[in-house]
Image 1: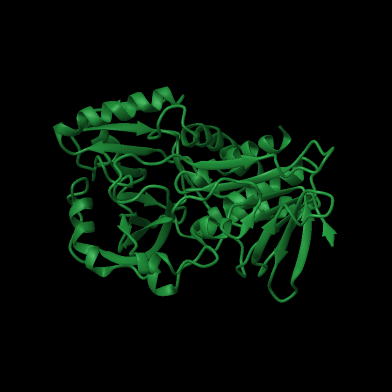
Image 2: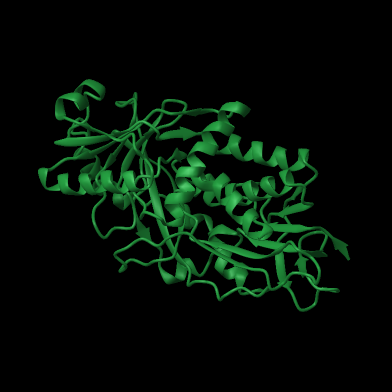
Length: 390
């Protein structure tokens, strides 16, 4: 049986970042991906926003990882020539009743170490973004966008340049601590060339199928969470971009997202979304290999009227017929439609699977890595690798 030091399961942006960090620390690592491409699940279907760290509960893992990850990502993108833009973001109140919520966002950001948010008056917003309607706003200069595919290609290259490997079309069938000769872990891999690998660390970063995969792994970790899935639809704008910055509404209390916001990508195209559409139990049961059947990803055209209404609250100039269905993604959630508070990232770690006399390794599983997972990817990689070093 072949042996490597670490096996990462899932080659999305977080799995690739973890594989990269392990390789940079001199660990022999293999990243296993069941699909035919890297980053073809959740990592390929998002807004590509670099978040500042504004909304998350102070001292939460989301807050810490987002703020640290934001700085690491911008530095990496600059050094490696990854297309990105620190364009800034407006968070707009469209009713005076939302001003208290805007203040709460400002306080949370400050508690998370985001000290550069700036209150803007109606007149100041009109100077920056003449098309935006609001009664008050916050400007976040640290928010931006990044080419997520180029970012993942960079991580992939770093893994291989430092002695690691990314192997596609290699689904993990099981992992077990009890059958590993001499201790450690055994990972059984399917695909065209099935194999078994002995390793000192296994990291489950399988995204949407992470909880399902965890049920096939006997690696000393707590039971996985019940999987919850929220689909997000996106509509794109026909015509030139009305904004230079991202525009976000004040989130509605008790919802599972940040509201239907406007992003302008690196090609100058404007899209709106995502909304929150909870998947039925029947659809949720169909998740396989960080993907759902293609029909799940069809944009729900019946939601177009709700998009027009939400967008016109901050952009009254939107005309009928200017929106067209674009794409959708599915977010792994740890809370459901009746929960009022968003869950934190969940990272489970155990060292109980270490080989006798080996001072490194263990088992790790990451759950609920939705937004700001892209922003937090490099910080999560540090966090996971530090936990294996402990």
